[in-house]
Length: 299
Image 1 (cartoon, helix red, strand yellow):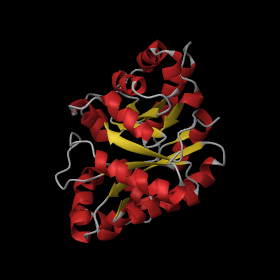
Image 2: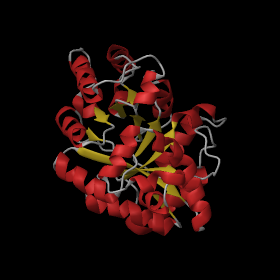
Image 3: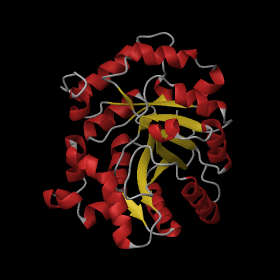
Image 4: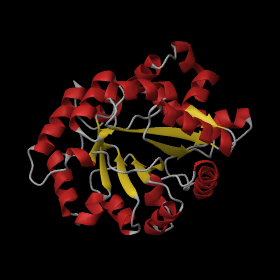
């Protein structure tokens, strides 16, 4: 059964919410008022404290962790914290899980071996618990074909990150019609090509150092030449939707046409990107207004 995350949501780094001087609950209420279906929290930890605050400030908004690292956040602890939430909050919390990346995992003392097997074992640990986090309340942050298969078998579906509409089309074919396919899409509301690409490259730079992503980019048709000098224009334009609101929403429509149930918009708005940059509230409002004008409410 697909959890109802709506057609469009917002993807936002957790540190930005933790650093914000504004009330997380009030901001969540605004996203709900703008009719976004879900808020995806990047680099989410397993303590679930921030999701709980966001859920308390809203009535319908789905909050998703994107993602909890299966190496560093033990399954029994995450399941226990999930069980401690009241039932209405659990009904609107989607637990995103993933195997992260070798440099990040090994930097904290783990050996990054057979990550897909580790992800499967983590799901086994969850399923052995009572109470647990049911398959319909968890989603996997995955990219490869076998990982998509695991998402289809063992969770509500997949949350791919940094992907093109053509990836979305192939992922839908791999998953089949029923599992949730919720893709992340980076956007820059800037019409000047040089500035838009500068902002995009500032965010993409870290991913060009992570083998899981460069492997995924190759599967999507990019080459080694596209990874040079911070990323080619072809790579930037393929992975980041930039331009005016209508242009950006055209990319969202492409993902939907390719089979995505949901598109989570990550707004990039500063050339000196940091995870703690202020939350881009005005951009969220502009995108919501554009969605209302073209297709009705984002949900």
